[in-house]
Length: 279
Length: 302
Image (cartoon, rainbow over all chains, first blue to last red; front, side):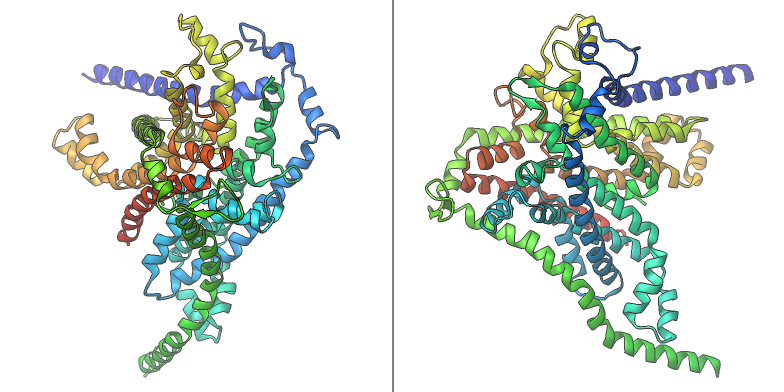
């Protein structure tokens, strides 16, 4: 009896590990293959059957980051656009999110619905009117336009997340500070912000991620001078063919900082990506 | 005595708060609301306006054509077929993500060891930019040097996956499944971890087997979280068309032309902003509908 039970257990666990192994293979092979391909020579990339063992070659990366590769220019654009829109969204989002969490507005539910529909609005449907507006204001191809475009999804996101985070912070501390003579705004700055720092950082990192990963807005709104890395990656697809070596190297550069930052805020990642539905 | 003083303080504070509340919090919220209005209400109104205008003659001075764009779009077969494909893309994609995501979550949840590292590795595709997911799909499925194409050929399947109208859409769906299934797993795992052991122990006492525990105890308890997750995912699948733009450009023969991609093409390739606006409004209606459910679920929880 005992023996049978443990045998069953071994079988179950073997099965579980097998399922997990298949899942992980499916999830990771594309990424591993991308990184490997970025380290291959042109000839090595296209050899059939594919090579799994080879001497790494950093030529592609070296070329990309060199003067003629022009990659640093795209990197700069990506960073400026992502950081600026994140900064704007975070400041306004913290102020507004706090107000929504603590204030007793009659329309909180309506505002919440408004925020969510703005955040979730299909990008093509947002881009069309923005494009018409931007052409009239001469903002197409400018960094200002791109930052503004990213704020269309980052501001509602930051507002929503900060509202949720501030709701989780007990109000007692702020009340005590206000008894001691602090104003509401001082209580927000000195008490609420420090207690919600992790939430603030997590929201900021997710805003950076959304802007950094954006391709759709940038493909229409960024010009030659303001091209971001994802647009540069898409430009490698030409009528003559695709520069796969560079494409895979660019892909590696796009995902590396996001994987690192994302795993750092892992706990909040699920909360953020599910718009606060999961704690 | 002490309590009286406390009460007096509290009353005073309360009075002060009610008076102050409007001013401080109102001003804190105002900048966001103004910016939000500029980025949401303005585009929405402009979309309605543009849907009645013809931009083909002059881009700066469009001409009013009444319901012309609406009539054109609603009688356009591509409009209906692109919505049909969108429903397939969202529907099949979500079903696959749900089953694989829940399956992986249960498998990981019951692992005796190594849960943490498995979750960490499993969630990596979530960080991948859609443009990179599209590039990877196109690279792996390339018919002359793609790794997956080579694997398929080992099984005797010599086909151009992305170049074939019957396999292009499944490939696009699988790219989305690859990228986003881990999110469903993470959400379900969070639900599983927060389950209290009591109902499960009660089920054990009643002699329930694992499958019964799953269908009658575990899944009903995390059902609401899963519904919310699916709502977010469905809105997100509608939002993005990057992968399609990179991997197939809507083709071959329109087989991957979902409504979002069709809008991009109508507006930015053919410069028909009027018809594009009609398409955009139909998409917005769907998102607003889904968003309403989402807010109901979220706010109802408190």
